[in-house]
Amino acid sequence: MRQTFQRAFLDTHEKVAVITLNDDATINALSTGMVESLNAALDRIEKDSHRAVVVTGVGRGFCSGADMKELPARREEGAGQVLERLFHPLFRRLRDLPMPVVTAVNGPAVGIGMSLALMGDLIVASRGASFLLSFTRIGLVPDGGLTFLLPRLIGLARAREMALLADRLPADRALEWGLVNCVVDHSQLMDEAIGLALRLAEGPAALPLTRRLFWDEKGYEAQLAREAAAQEKAGATDDFLEGLVAFREKREPRFSGR
Image 1 (cartoon, one colour):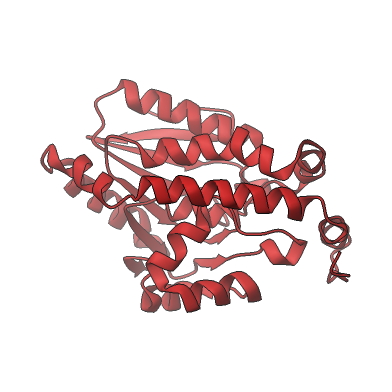
Image 2: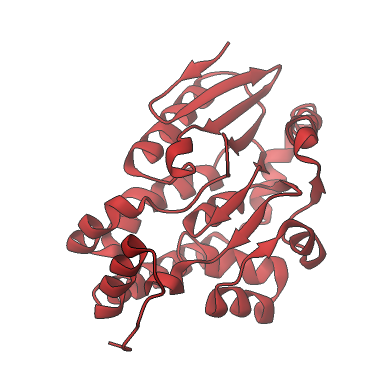
């Protein structure tokens, strides 16, 4: 039975819950409404007897990152404050779930949308998927825990390359680099992801304990705080304003270094 929220829906496959981001118009941007919908889906999952979760996106991509229409208002509040108020509680909640998480990356995972993809204990990508740290393109810094998770998955040199150059990483190379566990044809993506989740759901009570052992929670929390502080500074720069204007005008930004 499908349960529908404002910008996501929830399906059940035996002991597996499947959360689907559902805002194709924005390529499933992580807007305020999307975060609220994901939290509502997690509320339902925690009340039921699910033993594994799959997270995926509808339509053209997995998640395009933060909703660009909301960024000007977030600048007024303070970019670091928004992270701690809106996004960090969601990521902590995914980290602390008492069940394994599989992410099924059906297309581009961009910015903080890539952070969401990396919250999976196992990550399955379609051949058309890609990963992009787009932050420097609009004058911001990586957030959502990316600077903690990414070097641990692909190494420091490659993580720096992705963050500083903001080049797109296609799925096949993501597999070579160790960012994802497997790459499959798009038509096989959900079968593969649900199949893995069903295997996890049949596992022992030790599995949730095992997944938590791989989290350096103090390190993760420290890095979230560092990202928020850096984002607060970046969000107050002239270059961030220029990045927003350039995005709206569909042109390359002309950064001044201020």
